[in-house]
Image (cartoon, rainbow, N blue to C red; front, side, top):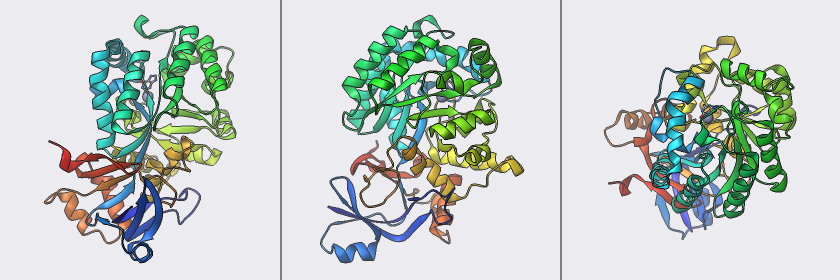
Length: 434
Ligand SMILES: O=c1[nH]c(=O)c2nc[nH]c2[nH]1
Ligand SMILES: [Zn+2]
């Protein structure tokens, strides 16, 4: 057993529902055995109950639950930063040509390493990952996530129209390759599978039915796709699915909108769509940096909350601007402020919840991860800014852990991450970097 001594903060409750969701321990203790938190509280209390366990002293920084990124694309690492193009032009000119390279296993393996280390080094311990259109590249991703110890919920991306021929499949092949990947990887170690049609624009009804067949056959795999991101995208989907009232209904008709579904973006939903998303208890993954970079629009968080839709956070690398969930939190905060009366004021507790426990809930993993309650897995990120840095000064002078948390969201970067654990295993340590 190890007793971690640290200033820690977590959100065991939902701050959108409760005024006391943020739990802080100035001098806290987390007793961990076989990767699981056995006791959580003040260091004095935990120490009194366990006087002989070895202590790992993490004072001088902030310990947070590992981040849960609920929307990120593996094959887009090297195209981060294609600023200034709207979605469909960005896909055609920057992203899809890059994704077509993943038919080459050597290329895929190099990026799988970059991608997984990009996540863990930023403190992301669980991610819902858009894989590649190529089954072998998804295989390579799962191999790499297993090697690194990441909690990966990932799947092969499937499409059968409107992209480029190399990225198209058929319903039969999508089903067969998906089934093989599920049988090989779902529930293997920390990996699990998400059925992933790219978006309705690139999916025939046949492909969506193949996805539905996999969801029916494997009742605990997850589902993810995109929705309502960009005006031209929405208009095109309307033309492609004349029998559907709106974008959501293209997925709904195939039975793909459930508690197991995470739909990325949802920037331009109708009231009917929000009502149905709430009724089916699916999640909207909000990706504020991507929405800003691609000019997609301002996420109507207030309308989602009013309708009762669960919301989590995603980086959307590479439409987004990097792997930092702190940056996503900050951008979400900025955008909601700029929306004036239509925005939701987001406190540090909201940002932490959105970056951690909300993602765990989106993935049905809230019993295992997302906060530091006893019984949860020890998935954690330790922020300890380098000596002499401005962030170090700011944290040293913060009047409370909550204010320190706000400052971390405002100015924290990858270089402030000193250590990351998943299931008690160290998956990143600043000292081990060359
Ligand atoms: O942000 C996005 N990134 C993508 O790769 C994508 N594909 C379809 N729709 C998308 N939106
Ligand atoms: Zn995306």
